[in-house]
Amino acid sequence: MSNTRPTSPHLGIYRWRVNMLQSTLHRLTGLFLCLGALLVGWGLIAAASSGAAWNVFAGFCGSLPGMILLFLWTWSLLFHLCHGIYHLLHDAGQGYGPANRDREFAPVYWKVGWSVLALSVVLTVLVWILLIVHMGGGAA
Amino acid sequence: MSAYPGQEGLRTPLKVARGNGASGTGVHHWWIQRVTAIALIPLSIWFLFLVGGLLHATYPEVLASIAQPVHAIFLIVLSACLFWHGALGLQVIIEDYVHTRWLEVTLQIALRFGAVLAALACVMAVLSVWLTGTGYY
Image (cartoon, rainbow over all chains, first blue to last red; front, side):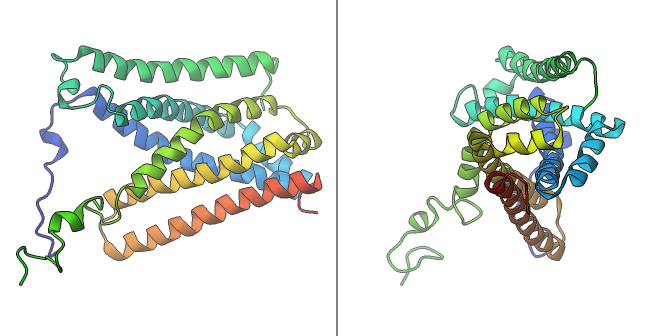
């Protein structure tokens, strides 16, 4: 390639920080949620098509692979949502910057980082407990 | 004639570059990503409740729920924001990881076609259920 612009250093030279985990998970969950968006599209189109088409869709959602995917989508959505809100606070200039990422200067940053992840897991479990209780233990 | 390399007319390079960023298209991508993100906060929470309430619903109950005006409108707005936000995210992922030029351009075009197609399909599906109460017929 004729591109002579400087390239950024390889990831391996950086000391590990919690925001690396957050950033990676945000992108991975976002990617996975794009597949979930297609499922939403499938559901809406199936509903608009016919009862038979809807039953195929509902059958997939109620199957074991479907339920596992729905659980993963729930967590992906809740992590992307929780971390997205945190991201928006960063965008607004709150608690953002190199100094904030250093554990010795800003231990709170690391705690909040892990807390966002923990919160998304807790919320996911909570949502599914509510669903199962609400549904009397039945599958979708 | 020009005092700076790349200068055109009387505009300084700073004047030409300001607000355009490295991509040459300014902050539009960043800004729309945030606007759709903010919209998706209440929409996705609402959507979780909608889906939760429809888990064991029969087909007519599903149609009746979608056909409620508030549900239909929120579903339409959700579809637009969801696929727009998703397309912006996927665009950056392609930019970051696909370095074969022809493949990158192909994927970027396919992504735009796919996002618009999916969003339009969702909107049409909701509209058809809402306006006819029975779907496409």
